[in-house]
Image 1: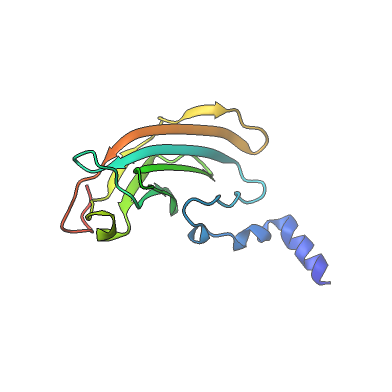
Image 2: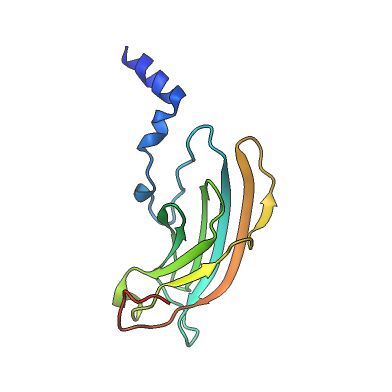
Length: 151
């Protein structure tokens, strides 16, 4: 009987209900969208630096849509790359200092408007709307004494 219930739940899409964006760690693959839902895959790359051009490690790249999730962290060279999927392309990405002083200072959150700036790299098939990418280039973060301040 249990197998029948699991089978019916899978058919109805309840199996995907256990997947939550809060459980996604930075740098790991995102969960696939629910069964039968259109989705888009996107790739983001950028380099995070301070006002003097010094790379900043440990800055979170966040997708700010209907759910805000960390999709990548900058490495020792300030480079952040991420590949994830969602129901649509983001219109805004945020660079957030999540480790405070550990990366050489505290920095203001920096928001980047990316609406209509992604390039299609692969046509979609089935439920996929395709794969898109964007290279933002250098993202300059401003140092702050107040970590909650936003640019």
